[in-house]
Figure 1 (cartoon, rainbow, N blue to C red):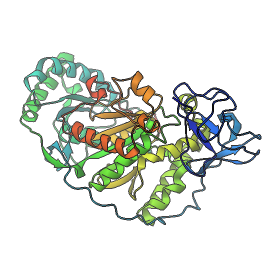
Figure 2: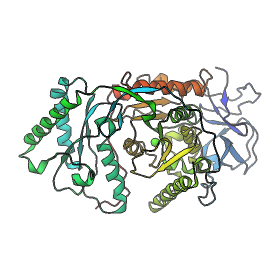
Figure 3: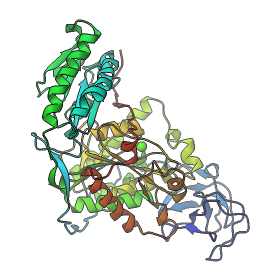
Figure 4: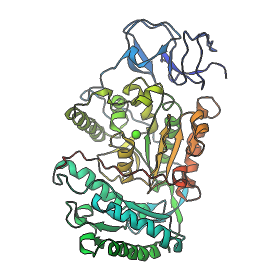
Length: 501
Ligand code: CA
């Protein structure tokens, strides 16, 4: 491959190296630029000489200021630039960009499960939820028995999922912050992929009683402290599971409009390519699904914060823009209370992948949100029922973001540059790689490769459409994602901003 870089925006004075092996000192690019030193793949090269104090521009935005003079063709590493302040929250433009209404995309459906509460499932599973961590190993033991001895009798059921977690007791359950984990777990317990109707296992003495977890729902509850020991409890769970599995087994997939897909987007192990390949392709997909009437969730407050000035203008109205700002403000205070500074994100892997700081990471991260209007802003623990593009506030942590999005989504898309085998038990997780090298190294973990955008083999639109069709197949059960195939189920990690006792 000839020496190749990608410049995202015409105003950028840095670009990223495409070649998997990097470029050597003296390498000549097609535009006449010469590399002044060896530069690894996905790291930044200066396109012009920069004077000390000059802004470094990527995505058309300032990602920092250069500390010393550098010539053209140099490698820009994270210690060569200053970290700019986050955009002040009291000076943001609110709903100023009136975006044209996109043309509706009609005629797309998936084969899904219609639930009694009106929701649409992409899988047909038995869910067994828990009110407290104390019962988790017992439930997991019972699930292994159910899978081995009972599930094979019910071929129309996709699986059994235990909703286990670390919450439920030893926490200040009446503190304002407790609402977040309780609501998140309550929504997950009534997820569309378990027909909104779980079995519930409780210990008995815990703080999060079943009525607290599921306030408007009266399921039959198996209480461990009412049973005569372990074997009797497991037998009780298996007996109820068998009855429920028989009901679930009678269900069949039916055609459901694509507008009932709710797709959660997040990134993990990002690199400098993420913002030019996989995230824009996912953003293209997001625009398509919104045009089809569906719901797209983007999240990860700390990776949106430094690009929020690009998002508040896109909000549907001032109220929505103010809600977005409120979420940024809440998180600024949360981080300040914990003594965290802004270098807490990115990770060492992000930096190895060429991301200098959180500003550059955020500019790449928000590409997942496509180009359209932001219709709704949801707070932590809220179940999203709105249609369109939604900012659902979550931490950026992969497990916590995924857990919070799970409260609402029936499909999950995860973009990665450095690679992660991440998966969830309750929804299919599709992984999209930023680079071909990762897709080739992990052919049995990456579902869609967006690295072809960097080399010019495919366009952003090509990969966006490819993902759209792939997800309709996955939603319909015609295809499985690799995470589903290998049953890679990360633990649920509810966000608890409240105190632990
Ligand atoms: Ca993440």
